Image (cartoon, rainbow, N blue to C red; front, top):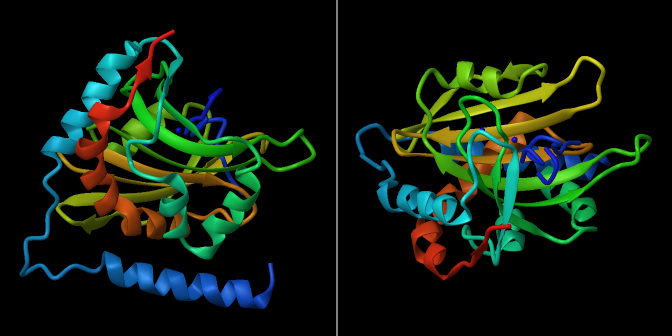
Length: 243
């Protein structure tokens, strides 16, 4: 759904030139829009049972508590190679990633300590600004499904943050949500897209000069099949090191 180290440092999130780049970004969004269009005569729903089990196993082995803000490192990203996943993103995401990669990749199980938000498994790049410069972050997360109306859950997670939602869209047996958030004083901004069904939620988040909910959603739609397939294949080989 993003904090010190992450999505959340999604939370400490993440977010923020030329005509050619604009044309490339527009073309990518058109392709993404086609990806999001479904043929309702075909059941192309994801089976997320194994992926959800893999996420829960990583959370359990981390020993983090949902009640307290905490993070535990993983030995690798269970979604696959993060650079490869970023390469599937729109140009705007890749541009942010150029700056975000100034610091090493972070792979972790993260608990925000916020009500209604379970611990999440996430992989991201984050380069923090110094107040005068913009933070740059790109990341992906997965977590167990949450109970309740999803928008309301997000409002409860992002306390003190103004969220602006795009229209929800059905996608592969679940729902795709896209939104941007900011604090009134401008100290915290990000854009994100989440997909969820009855078992699992997966999200793509970013902060940087080209951030938008559209490119976050396009990125998520492009990599979601790979993320769901990779989780059960990779999770058991990943080491989780509780502090």
